[in-house]
Amino acid sequence: MKVSQVNVSAVQTIHRLGIIGGGQLAWMMGDAAAKLGVKLIIQTPSTNDPAAKIAADIVLASIDDVAATAELANRCDAITFENEFINLEALSTLEKQGVIFRPSLSTLSPLLDKYHQRCYLRDLGLPTPKFWDWGMINKVNSRTDEQNQLPISFPVVLKARRHGYDGQGTFIIKDEASLNSILAKLGNQLLLLEEFVPFERELAVIAARFVTGEVAIYPIVETQQENQVCRRVIAPADVSLEVEKQVEAIAHSLLNSLQAVGIFGIELFLTKNDQILVNEIAPRTHNSGHFTIDACETSQFEQHLRAVCQLPLGKTSLNCDSAIMVNLLGYENADSDYLVKREKLAQIRGAYVHWYGKSESRLGRKLGHVTVLQNGELRGDRRGEAIAIAQTVESIWYGPRSFFPNL
Ligand code: ADP
Image (cartoon, rainbow, N blue to C red; front, side):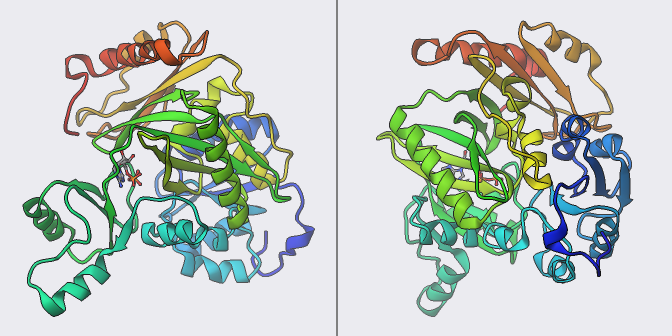
């Protein structure tokens, strides 16, 4: 695509797709791209990044280098994203020149800042936890008080409004002393304050929207977090039909209102009385959708490519009864490919091991995942079996530190 010459309406099926970001989410698009005959051109800072291996072409630059994105645009028909570290202002110059971003920058605009995202959800009438802009609380209090008077009592949740991921930048705070020490660490960052939701379970749903407005929704899953990091996903979630309908309605209403194109991950809290609250929307493929690679007719990665490249959406149904996905998180700083452990994991019946090929392991880093397919729905009494499978995977991977508390 020549930046200055593109004619948006003339672009039909996209054969050369640019991706800003070269991590595992871009890497997992590799197989689907080959299947669909789409060439992936990746903007990423290092040839060691996971997606470098599957790229037809690489623009070697940091993901916020807008001159590099202009070069990426010259080598492809449209550009998509693998993360939300997006500089909208810088990219809007390119969009004005005709570069096609999918999702578009106007879709992304209300989502990148967690406070703006909450406001968007509230204005759409969707249920969210109660929230406040931390800056406003500070302003009001500085007029009257030395101490910050919180509008809610502890525990509270404080979040960095931008650039948080995998729980980095999310803090569950029990008392005034912890609040002050976290505030001191965070410095002048823009922050969001939220009520702590004593949820029963966390759910997630992956949904895709096509340029023509068609929406395809995957089975709702249960996600399990520890220290704000996703550890396991159980598909499908054991929820009532009402909850299922409510979640699907939320997905429809969100994606339509955003005029979204591509895959979106929606994280939710399910409360004791079956109330749903939206926690977060990720405008990209999502960790809670990794099970779709092995367990669904169409993986979330293929579906994303289909949506953004204007190929008809695929079926989202499960091709098995249930699936358990377990993240393999780094538990030490090391240079190892953990081959012996991976071989052992692959011997679990129904297991598919996905290894992202990162050369360095660090504490908490996502190095791979395992999906185990099961016969029979692991609902009700059988839910314990899903947990037992996850524990088998984790005891092979983490060994004696199986449920390490503090990453
Ligand atoms: P990230 O964007 O880094 O994934 P999230 O906002 O999704 O951060 O939070 C990560 C995890 O922290 C959630 O999955 C949940 O377990 C916990 N969490 C976040 N917000 C709240 C909240 N308001 N109440 C209770 N737990 C929360």
